[in-house]
Image (cartoon, rainbow, N blue to C red; front, side, top):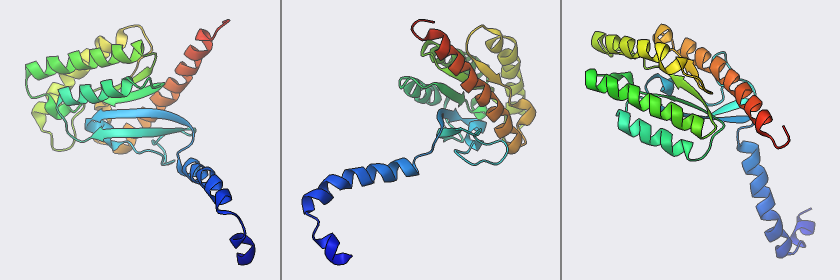
Length: 204
């Protein structure tokens, strides 16, 4: 066997090497529909591929770029960068710990509004997460999250468009429930994007 391999010209090995590398990369790469997940706050609880209940739905995987804590402007910049890649489905959320005063609450509303509209303009289906306090954030952050959450439900989520909203306030203390709520919305988002693509194909 070794003697036979030694007789193979080096040029053949040089030609085969790229194909072998590509095959290994493809084997290691997650399979299914890519769902971009970016932002801060409770969104950091999501995991990429685990198949336990509440994780990425079957047939999908999460491409994660999340932080536990981050300023609102930095989160907006990172989400906009992902949108420039024209994702099919994007999940994003902001850090509730940034809601330290009324000006920050107003900024949060503006950021979520711009990002949601930007995603829809990029023909992505956005799964928008409401801000919700993490353990240890304190009563003031909880109250601010509730106020922004009321706006989230009554205004942002009532606008027409591709958006899907996930209110995390009822699940804030339960990471498994957070993952399950997001996974359910992601399943619907994948279906919604498939329907959108079908209606925009040439000849439809």
